[in-house]
Length: 330
Image 1 (cartoon, rainbow, N blue to C red):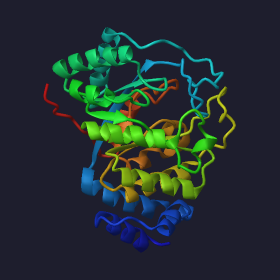
Image 2 (image 1 turned 30 degrees about the vertical axis):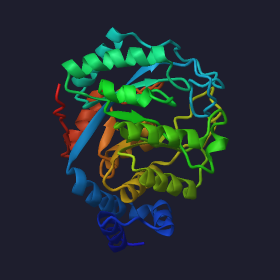
Image 3 (image 1 turned 45 degrees about the vertical axis):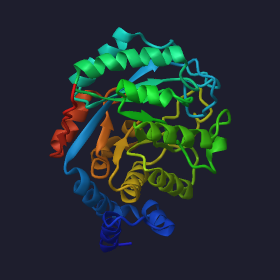
Image 4 (image 1 turned 135 degrees about the horizontal axis):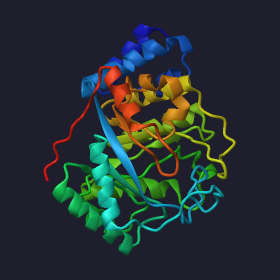
């Protein structure tokens, strides 16, 4: 498939039409020598909606380990033997200190993430108290990722000033039971919809490299398009020793870039984020990711290290891109 055809797919995306399954598969299975024309097509769509701006997000691991779920990719799950730090929900001063660090890293969104099936009312109270103070004192958007939400919990978070709620689909519906057994794909869909109904912006993404097929990847992108997720973090499996997926074959850098291009063409107007695993899977090709995505996590992830923040800032600057500044009312 040649450059002109990639341009045609970009124009199709910009016109609001969805790629067909065959077109989507052609992106993932394109020849390696077609990578630059493909990324240029992705950039045509990305630049239409976001210009050369890059959004930065920072994660705070607010509660680590102690999780009863059996997610095969996760070092915090009950089936993991990975030697990670485990602790209960961080207190309000620590969560607020994390927000200040997010500002120092030039992040516009501060992500409060907690392990577990879902938050207890006490844990929700702790997060809400911190969010209310952060919102009243700092120009930050707040994203919460606390697991499955019960009735009324999404509304409480929205009322406290949480802008966005993250709950990743992680993989396709058909591949889901090979990754997780303790909750269902429908549970995850329901939480995304509940967050959306509360008025929070829905954030939901995927993990690439868990044994899924190309068809599964296309299904993930199509599902997130139909869910109308505003923000889509695209993670690449970091096969952590001690987890059931520790022996998975790593995603090759070129396949990772083709995947990012695919998500841009299927979800053209959405905030796409190169998320966990980008450093170890894209390696020296990391800068090319920004021709498809418009968002990055800066700093460490939940139990794994990220790239040095100054390196991310330099990468953005060297490309001639600019960090997007938020003007969030306080």
